[in-house]
Image (tube, rainbow, N blue to C red; front, top):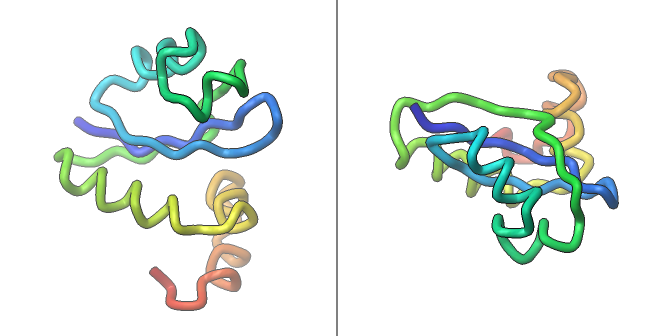
Length: 92
């Protein structure tokens, strides 16, 4: 099982990633071993996760979410489907 996840960083920004082990990955991010972006924005917390059967599907979805503006990511995190659709120009 693979996951696309969104972290909320200490500065209230979002980080999107994918992994097959969400617990390990969160530990890495909070230990400053999870990438440059999160290393200076700790602590981070998982605010959204979405399961996928394979790595390819997870990475495709991760790339899609990374193109989104912060407001659209916030709508996804909060589960506001109406706002999410309003913010979707191409409905991808």
